[in-house]
Amino acid sequence: LLIFPFAHLAEGGEDIQITRVADADFEDAPATPVFIAVVGTDERPGVSGARADALHVVGINPAERRGAILNIPRDTWVNIPGVGASKINGANTFGGAQLVADTLLGLVGVQVQFVVTTNFAGFTNLVDAVHGLEVDLPFPIFDSSSGANFNAGPVRLSGPQALAMAR
Image (spheres, rainbow, N blue to C red):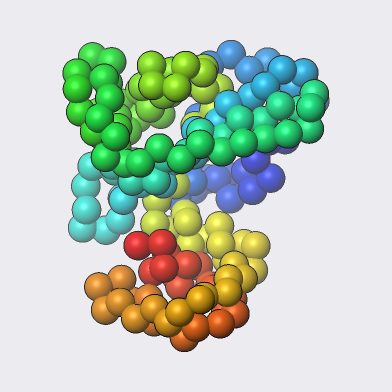
């Protein structure tokens, strides 16, 4: 899949799923903008529901060689088609990738062609697949709830460490 270079991580796994939810017929690079919803769920052992706690709309305009990302706060109240007014993070729980795409169409007015969904395990695997994330922390972080324990300064985060920081 040309627009998602880590698609191989989704093959045969349940931690990262790529779902085509709208027409997106192209052989090589598309000529028109493509919109992708990237959803990070809270799904993990002991937690059911898979709420979309991290939700981003990625727009790629290949003709202009530009892109943009719109973050949607998980507690944004929206109309979820067939459900009614609710927090946007529930759209994934109520109807999966297609309902996420339909809800985003009503909220931001763009047709999402693909939804990339991952859970905690998929997030850590993705970070580890790119050999970690380099961050420069302006202050120390010590959070016993998430397990994030980092001194100030540059640090390369492994997948589990990045998840602790994200939480």
